[in-house]
View 1 (cartoon, rainbow, N blue to C red):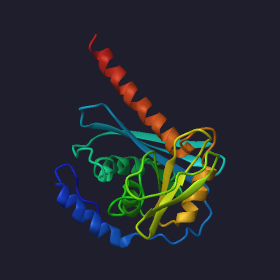
View 2 (cartoon, rainbow, N blue to C red):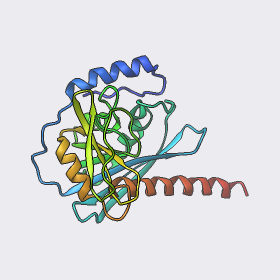
View 3 (cartoon, rainbow, N blue to C red):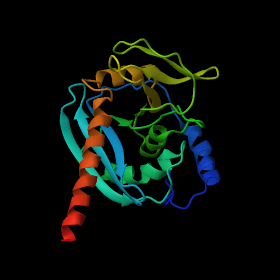
Length: 232
């Protein structure tokens, strides 16, 4: 699938048209291969700046041992709009993807998979463009309805939109807020849930996206410190 030169000057109506076209290619059949490496992706940015810091961390699965971590600094002018996160973040993440010394078997992204109004969350968008199995792990719900899971580790309930299941609400820890798991591309609903359980250690957020969050924040703060040092 071809990738537009950039999304910086797209209107929301143009972005919606891209989502409707891309969603025709979503594949949620079960992944039929052994997972040895799993990647986590995230973005960090300073408020009111066009620069974004994108990163992907690659881990052994299921040990969660770090294999590699890669970050880039890029410009993204597409605004943050709910339901269109991919248009702000995916171009920078694709730059990181190209630099990875080893490509993971599955990618986890900080956001939605098919649990998006048009079924095209950031994990689905990224998965379609890279042709890699992908899963979304979001900290907040974008669409759908569910019953709050019991307050116990790995309790979960279906996330539904009308008559269709689009993901799971999952308790990763006792006394913590729910996270929302949905398949992105080339992986099934149930596999998405089981993989996220295997990636969860001692924190609310599964390790791939938790560690990706740390490396992009580290890159952003380091860059900010370098800028301040140059002023004196």
